[in-house]
Length: 213
Image 1 (cartoon, rainbow, N blue to C red):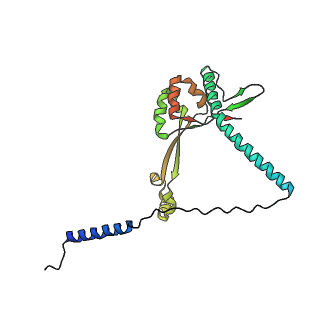
Image 2: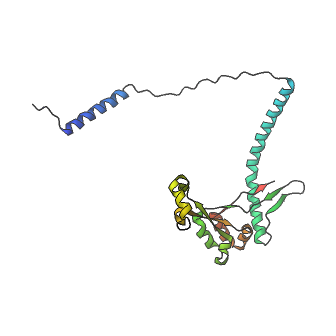
Image 3: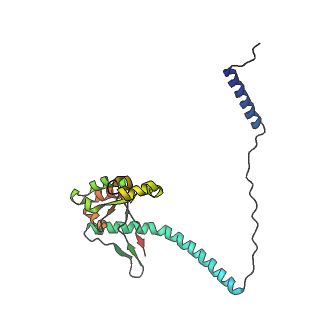
């Protein structure tokens, strides 16, 4: 009779044990439920009549504020969309303005735009192709920023080396960060583009939301 087991037999025996364990655990399986503790009502403390008046006033104001905020969310997008359409029409006809009064003499808003744009750096070259090559670089401005690498501040040896050899080994200590910004008159000069080109530009660049005052 042999007094040893093969590696294969050992593995099979271990697998049986694991299966038996799983069966044992599953035989008494229950679904865990989360029981929430009932909230205990906070004690209401009476206050003087003048304070109760202020409480009533604040509750009324909060309710009015909530209603007003809801009304703003419903009305603002439609007004802004119409304002942007109106601005485009006027600008393409040579009457660009950053702000307008919209409405009637009795009831109107100031529609105000800003020359602030968000875009991805990786889209810069594609954005430039939309403009005349002669003016693209003055409209999309390249900014170069040089920073001292963070590792230099953590390493005493690098600090010493920086003092002694910075002029000679500049690239070892500094990294150059390139970003782009728009020209001061960018929001006006985009109307030099054809309308379809402006549509392409707006797929790549987003102007900040106009404000209604």
